[in-house]
Length: 136
Image 1 (cartoon, rainbow, N blue to C red):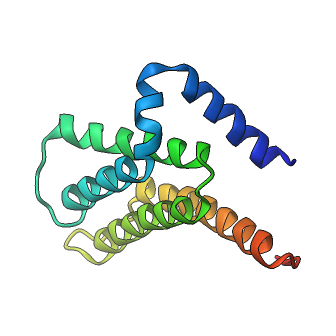
Image 2 (tube, rainbow, N blue to C red):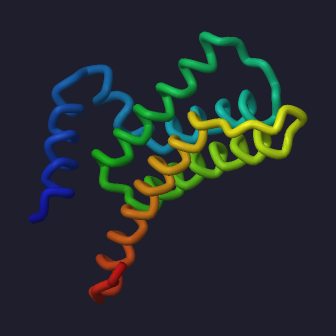
């Protein structure tokens, strides 16, 4: 077993030992995508959901990612990571081509981090499914 799966197994055993997370473990994908949908509503569509719900949706997304990783559902993990990276990419484009023409460094760094993590998970999934080695 490699480190990637060992960390996932340890995370799952931690979540299994906690009552709250044990209840959320089967709802991993739902928690992640609900948080992602609320982030999309707030950031891209401009529908104000309030600062508390905005922060709660971000943390729900992060907890959903961790739960999805603990269950080792790699396909949903990279979809969630790439989706959040896409939201950050749209924020960067809105900032650059908007009225003020500035570079949103915060969204750019989030795009690089979450997009890069999504790429790494996708690459690992593709190597695991084909058995071939991918250079890059």
